[in-house]
Image (cartoon, rainbow over all chains, first blue to last red; front, side, top):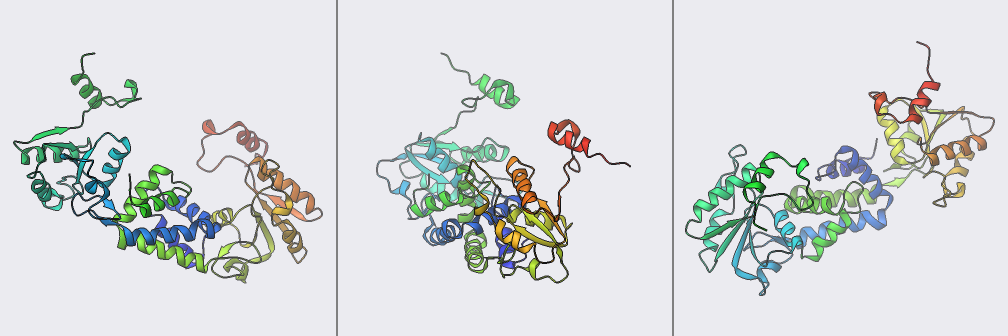
Length: 195
Length: 195
């Protein structure tokens, strides 16, 4: 029980972070309050700095402190390859993998009839505009979920005539067959490759 | 990959919170940056408010926005009962249980030869001073860990002559015997009560 309303409010807001529930938010608040100088104040300042400095890239939708973002500005990245992702988190994940040297386009979500996410609510029109100018291949890197695959099919229709690819489905590296779902196993089996 | 240094710094600081690793800190930072007005800025403000408003209670060591804290000030709480806890988190946990209507004393940790935590580094001297003035019973609510129980034994020696009690050990409510460790089962068995 924290009686101070400032402490209660801190706990409530921390509990809204993904990965923190009410219990762990309380623990986090206690750690923050115990390390006021070392953690709480620097974190509060970092949040305000990030809030002030961060902007959406006007070209691809990535989050960065400059717009166009560092990726869109980077002349070493191939402008003929465009990788379409649902979310900024997916873009960051692909960058961590370091496998792609082209440019990105962030849709801002995936189509979902249930949640009322129509193509108009995603960055589809800007994507169709972008691909007109010197893009040779569009890589659809949607999540392997129903919504992600629906979105990929929709985009494939809209991009008719272009070279469109998608990520391979299969056994994750380090994965054990025994623990994999039937869908993944079946996809991996069908897409088997000659050694 | 977040290229903006402000974003990287936010992620690094978030990763220091308990319950958030590097991966979930990145997710949390993304959510914060997406909800700048609704979450990031209010949270940064709440942190600064909490940092400015929070102080350690000069009597018991609780964290509150006033000192002495709300519990030490509350005239309805029995000053003859003193519950000794390792940490503020334990105090809050007992308050949530709502089982205790006395006052607290926060030690600030538990004795640990390994970590060099000696009685001088804990709030032991203030405790021994406090119990001289009208305390009838000292309840030792240490964790049921080696360090906690060492601390409890040490305090029991120091408080010789007073009525000193400790929390019961046993089967947690809702617990299944099959999943409990031998120590707990053995403690629960030895402390069995007549129905």
